[in-house]
Length: 457
Image (cartoon, rainbow, N blue to C red; front, side, top):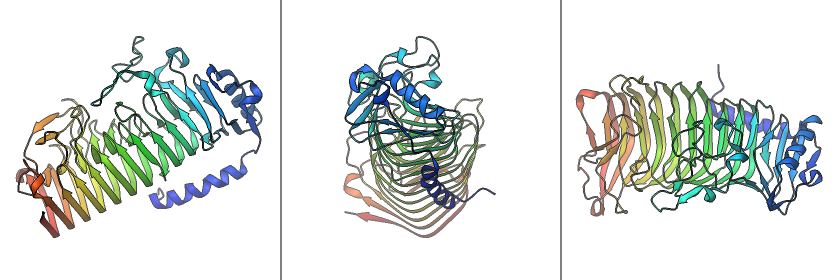
């Protein structure tokens, strides 16, 4: 039986210092391999030579000493090699397409593929120079460079990511700042036993697709004590080629123009045993979200001890200020419909410009949802238009609708225990006075205990 998420968190955090003590102590400074650190000359060859020498010696640390700005094309980490960017040092990602491998799936400033025990630390900064990829700055949403001429990727998401681990084990990323990614910032793909701790992520707030942490098809993952301030989704579990299970995220601070915690939208396989605890979400377009669109199922998820404030941004960004957004529907008419079951919201408080949105689909029900000790405050303070439900991507897209405290459809089993709704009446033009909006023919198994709806002047 898989370990419960809290036990997983304790076990992996204990393993992290043990692994550091057992790793070879030898340090390989990139300066000894000819790195200039002047921010203008490429230091790729020197950094890679230090990595390769470190790996050949059985592992250790590759140091980027301070002060220094180390400009580089893709650097490939090896097993048991930890990249240490010292405080006051920066690793700068190149801004030319030729700085990256031919295959889009390997477009990272730092890439670890098929490794064991690789990591990044040091107290310094890895910077993707994302501003160089902005074609037209816009307070609504930046227009970005797209390197899609080869056809290896499509649309405007053809830009390099910052830090990636693919098919790797025992990943450790801690005590590092990840700054200004051009696309996704930290990406785990089919990884096992990863610890992400005390990582600060800063992305341009107007840049699309600069996600904070994407956990894709990866299992036994711990994210703790992280600060994420970026334009797009902050913590984003995805299932593209296999299931995702045993993910724990705790003690994090998040601000985003999109969704703070979002499942999907890539959701071809199952998500199981996920815990999100002690999270603060500030001025985000959406708080806790699930966009299940490809037939995968979600089960055994807990959101607990979360405080959040959600607001409207320009509608070109997915989201409509929902504090909680749980949806499953087919991406395309021929897509499968996944189910979402056994999801718990415990000790949640929010101030938001929109209501809770819980929407299954005809063949993809929401089952056994529980709200316990939840305080929802509804208040408008921006000038963006309300009265819309956002099903994107796919499904029904944007739908005009009355706005209530909770919108419910296609649900079998919803338990509400000690839940309050507080309404700032003077600022809620366009809201429905009914705290619950639903079609009875799509709902069964509702249970309400100690539930109240209050006016706040």
